[in-house]
Image 1: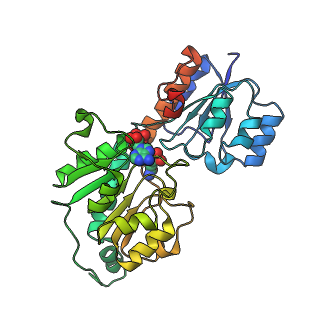
Image 2: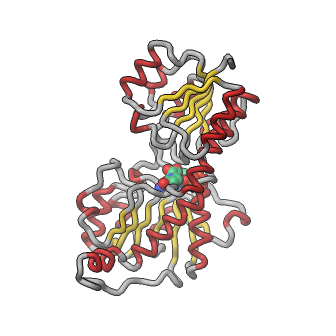
Image 3: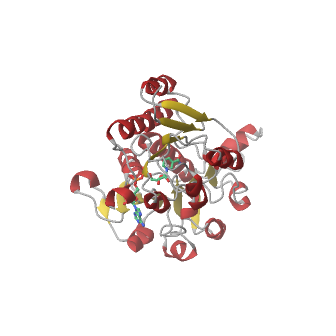
Length: 330
Ligand SMILES: NC(=O)c1ccc[n+]([C@@H]2O[C@H](COP(=O)([O-])OP(=O)(O)OC[C@H]3O[C@@H](n4cnc5c(N)ncnc54)[C@H](O)[C@@H]3O)[C@@H](O)[C@H]2O)c1
């Protein structure tokens, strides 16, 4: 029996075969579901004392809660790697992990296509205010209160955060005849820009017809879009958010929609999921999805395999394929 163990939190669904193949090098332990209290109790009684790597599934946060300083304090001393299934990892305290010499990986790239597809779906839906006719039809009112929408053709799509998903949004939006501009922490190479115009944050706000949020949530990006920023935008701007809800002050978004500043919005993510601001739920000009950006068979499988590949490389070679950028810089 292998002397080192890995702990799978929350389950592996699509890559069971790949998981089981790791049993030749690792003892596999599982915490498929439960509460934070139960998980912490298991840590404290020493059940995981041989665990060197954790597979943290996409849904596991609902069982264990965030991997914050409290959790880091009880995780086994043997733990060296946390392989997280998700491109966003704002529920893991990376600084606390680094202090304990725990390396963390996430699943960028694998999420790009599915999330950008949802971004485009929301953008077109918001431009056409598609929820109104969709709801009217099902309520037996045929077109109901449907009004004319707007074409993407010729409009300027502003992308805040031109990473993997932002670039896939850009590639798709070009096919709709949109002009692309972006703001990022640093300007991209000409190859990665692929013709998109690099602008300042304020210029992005002032001149975009559609603003898409595609950056990570962290202490410095929380509420990066609030009342002041809405005030700087074009009248009738369309907002798309597939990144994280707390990037925007949701109450300020509701106010901007109500005042007509924001014509419509398409959202996959919310400040306090699964709660959604009533001013959004009750507004037919907002297209809403319940955080399903990566919810396809193909993408879920690819993400699970990437997490397992990280875990395998970590145990065999002491390296991660997709370590989070904050730790790579250190
Ligand atoms: N809706 C979903 O299901 C879903 C799925 C995957 C990812 N996401 C979210 O999307 C986010 C983006 O994912 P990604 O894979 O494209 O990440 P990424 O790291 O490839 O790209 C993020 C980009 O944002 C830029 N950035 C960071 N801070 C910035 C700032 N203050 N101003 C401007 N740019 C800034 C970075 O330089 C980077 O280019 C993730 O962090 C995650 O939270 C959501």
